[in-house]
Length: 340
Image (cartoon, rainbow, N blue to C red; front, side):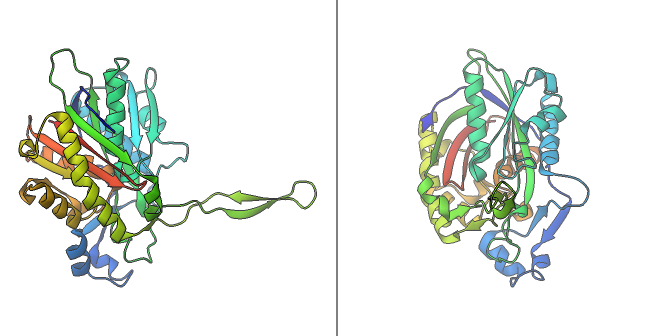
C-alpha cells in the first residue's frame, strides 16, 4: 500500500532510552560458542543493552521515559497529546502498554492510547497510522513510541540468534500542519506477506492444565510462548530483495528520487543488510545512519534510537530528507520519507 499524506513531525528524544546492563560480544563468548570477531564481522554488532529482572524496570518504563523525553524536546505536556501509539511485540502487559505510557506522561483525559504489533516494522507502521489520525482532522498531536525487549524471548543457547538482539525504546512527536505549512512525512509504502511468517516468529506454546470440571475434567492450556526463531538466510534474502523496492515506492510517492535523499535509515538488524540495500540504491555508506554497533537489533526501537543519536550529534540537520525502512516478522516491511 502506498499513500501520500501530509502532516509535520518533530523528532524528540533528548537521550536514548535503553537499559543500563550492557552485554558485549566478549561476554557472549562464555555463553555460546562464538567470538567477538565472528559476531562483529557478520552482524556489525559489538554490544547490546539488556533488560534484567532486578531493579523493577520493564519495557513500558523505558517507553514512558522515551515519550516523556519526546514531549520535553517538543516543549509540550501530556495535556497536549491526543494520541499515543506504542509499537511493540514484547509488552509488559499482554493487553498492551500504551495506556500505562500515556498515564505516565500525563496524557489521560482527552487521549486515546493503543499498542501496534508489527515487530521490526512497527515504528514506521505506527508513524503512518498516527499520521492518518492527524490527517483526518480529528486529532492534532500524537506520540509514537517504538519499544521492545526481545531479549526475553531469545534462546540464549542459540548462537545464531542470541547475539543479535538488544532492548530499548525511542519516541517521536507528530503534529498536524495547517494549510500551506510544509509536511514532515513526504510519502510512504507499507507491505506484509503472511506466507513468510514461519521465517521469523515467536509462536504460542501452551502447557496442559487439568481443570476439575465435572467428569474427567477439562484439559486447558496455560499460556506461554516458545523462544523466538529465525531463518537468517531467508530473512536476509527477503530484506535485501524487498527493502530497496519499498524505498523506491515511497520516494516515488513523495515525488523524489534517490538523489534527493540526504540520509538512509534502515531498521538496525544487520550491517550486511544495510550495505547491500545501500549498494543497490547507489547510496554511499557515508549517508547511512547506524548505531547498530552499540545497541544491536532493538526491533521497533531501532529507528527512533538511531535517528535520535543522529539528530543530537548534529549529523542530521533541519530540512534533511531521510529515507527510512523497517522490515521483519510477519513478514512485514515498509518505508517512510521524512523531512526533518
